[in-house]
Amino acid sequence: MDQKWMFANRLSNEYEGGVNEFVSFAVQHAEAIDNIICPCLRCYHIRRVNQSELKDHLIINGIDPRFVYDIVMLEHGLRERFSFLSPAQTTKFSYEQVNYIHEAFTAQVRRDKLFLAPFNAGEHWVLIVIDVFKERIYYLDHLRQELTERKQMKLMFDTALKVHRSTSGMSVPKAKQNYIPWDIIECPRQTNSVDCGYYVMKFMKDIITHQQLVIPTKYFEDCQFISYNEEQLREVKDEWAAYVFYNCF
Ligand SMILES: [Zn+2]
Image (cartoon, rainbow, N blue to C red):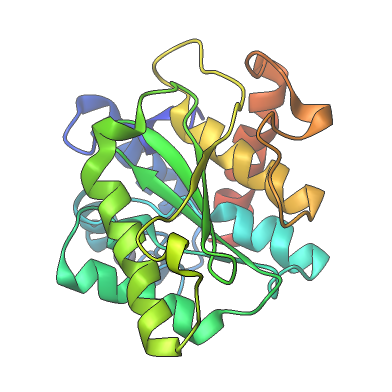
């Protein structure tokens, strides 16, 4: 089963077709069809639902792309060094969403930690990586669009960092008070229009597996590809499939 639908627009036929196929698979493999663990962005594998709820949730809420968390982080004990921000709660600049990010920072910040925020920039996924303690943000966009085209996104993360700064009493040199540096990372570039979700997953996996808390501007030495090839992307696609199919049902 192809997983591309998971990153398609939720209103598209591709997404709905994928959901139907996914639900049939789930029903066939579930112990009881009214008791299926839901991988949607609201239930996040905790709540159990029936067949029609599963379909509704996947259409309405979307599917959770944070598979890296479970398959890589738990295996390697990296929970302390990397945290994820939910893409469902960082969609647009609003008081609630800034507050969500700020609360995540406050609850989990420590000196040697990065927050990974897969961000849906309108039918296109990018990755934002935040070092709260150093007030530094890394930006990975495999289409290399200008950051100035993403003003709302930048404002949301900058504001959350500033709120965190003022509530935690962190002192910052005067010159840096209004300026939070964003490092544009020269990551591999995407060559088609459908793989962006997989690129972001691959970036997250690269960052976590390197276990480094600084992302070099030219990206990690052993990952400096012009673009990822089919095999490199298949690696995250297969893991995603394995995660969903073997852990969720
Ligand atoms: Zn659900």
